[in-house]
Length: 279
Image (cartoon, rainbow, N blue to C red; front, side, top):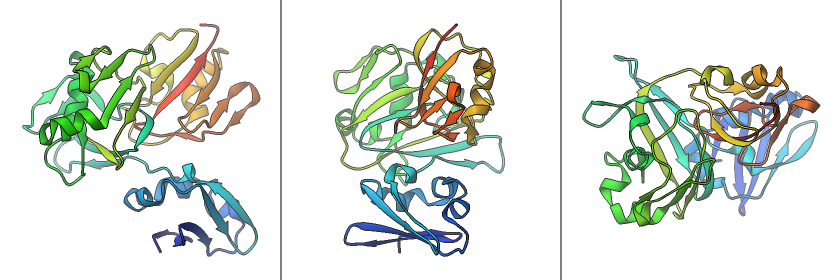
């Protein structure tokens, strides 16, 4: 057995995963609309199964086949009991991914306890200070092994296509922008990790961001320490008929015109592509 939670356990046999629901409720009730799988499994255990293509789900009543992206690890927030600071950690998968900032990047604490405003500093510096090879490391990968960092963090791009290329020492993105989303490509065959400490800054709807967007594609993130329903988050702009489509990195979509939310909740630290109109 890899890990279990509530009435669900995962077992592996010959590189196949069996998800067993030991409840007499139906699949939908047992999974609570798949939120249990997304929120309660331990990310350390999930990393070992992230490349499995199919998962068999069995219960007393029904069986289904789920894609492995439903088991995507989430970020973890650990509050400091003394101060209002929070440490955020999240896996960076190999190959392509999207990320955003989960904490207030104008108030990030460095290893010396100093508060740094990363809105005034290049995104290259933020990533050098926040990407770790192992969660147990005291040093970010850049300071532990600079060449390894430059080889593993292949590139980062913003919505405009501007790029940060570590191996070339080139930062075409400039400073970090709160609540923006970014694409990353990691050359590492193993997981890397985001780890940084700062103050929470709760964005509850897209209107709280205070940004002006353009028609067409925009890449955004949610600065929040909890999941939030995509419909709730985008409601102010949906009410103005300004949101046509929202996609996560796995291709799940929220389509306001069809009242269809295939994304479910927006995840802190993830990035999302949004197609705006009528702005």
